[in-house]
Length: 611
Image (tube, rainbow, N blue to C red; front, side, top):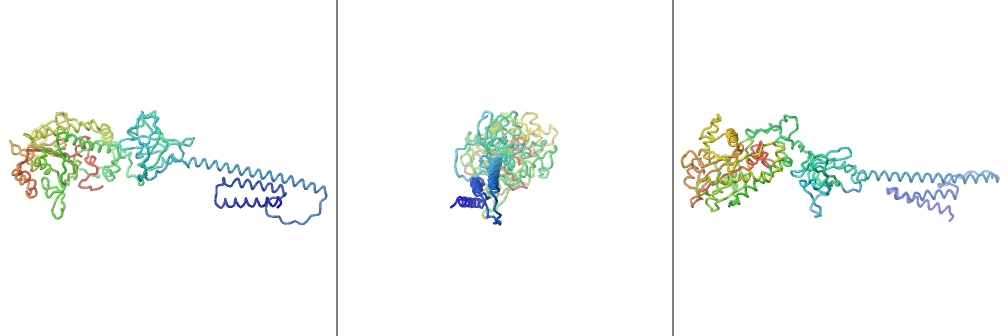
């Protein structure tokens, strides 16, 4: 086989390889060397044959034989043309190589901007407990200037993000605390344009993992709780993306109150949705409660319910130290716990029943009749009262205490006084950050209280009202407004927001209340007040069964419905007393909140039974 035939076969073979590569849509980088080789062979083919590689040309008629001079000139032209063709082919090959190199560089640049090959941003895999790693997350509350220069990994809700030039700023929030994160496009490629765009484009309130270096900014970050630090983002991954539109913005939900609302009187949901006087957007109470799982994320609400939790801890702590035993009583009863009215009724396997208004009867049995002597309970209380006010709920959390006494119900009052002082001191000592987070959104004055707690009689309270020009009979129950006014009078006279009154009229107290030994119109009962609103009601209880029945009949209570309760006192019962506390109302009034719904996780009132 001659050289021409070998070149032809080789060029054809390379052509098939290139054709196949194109058909498979392989990157040009993979078959460019084959193309270069084929171009070089075509050039050599022309040098050897004097012809361009391709299909054979049509034969031309033979011309007359040229003379020797003409033949020599023709050969020179052929050589010259061959050199030109080779130079042209080389030039084309160089142009093609340059174009391919340029395309390669442009692709690398585009990939770099798009973050191709980077794993420092994007959606994280679904967490299904696949593995345990050695990752360590830092709590946002622990991000302080002392960590400057340290790498940290944090997780939280992305409260907001904004794109500024070639950078992204984010505010990451976890429980009460928030921190600013920032990143800018990095010429070295660590932070790509696509990463910045990804961060700025995530839906707000998505859950994210952010890793970066702690730095100290030149100026405090006013939008974050961790004002003296920010995090230079190195990686950013979305753990769970918010998939539906937010019903309201967290920025609006966190905005401070516009003026002070009244904390008494009727509650009209429509009034809560009116525009604010200052023109700023605020989220109304009903919108918050309809989307409570989001509303609870605000720092103020996080704080309110952490304080509420601390009240429970302190309540148990104090009573356990004083020899009390925690009990758990039934919430389904055959009859009403107290007056027989305002109960939620139900069918208990054919027996008419109701939800407990309080654990009153059972805690008396436990303390006075069963030998436990000092008991307490925390649990739900149900009141079927159609009261659409700012301080009433149909279900609330009751903190109840009952104890035996040796001589006088003042023994109970001393325990209650110490208990509340322990709770107030504990909140102030353990919840400083939480108190300030609440105050930022719902401004209030710190609660003032005395040691020991101020005590006045009901008659003295009525006299204070009359001296202030307010009508109040010693044997009539206080109205809500008169209670409020009395709180203001006591605050002005004694400089305390917390006090209690005893010796209430017997006619306004439950049937099991012990009558006063000197005045049959009065009772050995008492109420505790915070900022002019009742938060505890209690009394010495009747421990003599005949007197219990007498008082029950006076209240038109069917004795048959409380037979077990009365019978429990027929086998010897200890003198005793106690009281019931409304947890939500204590928290509401300690923090000066205008509506008890703000202190209830998922409120139940006459118009709300969801979520």
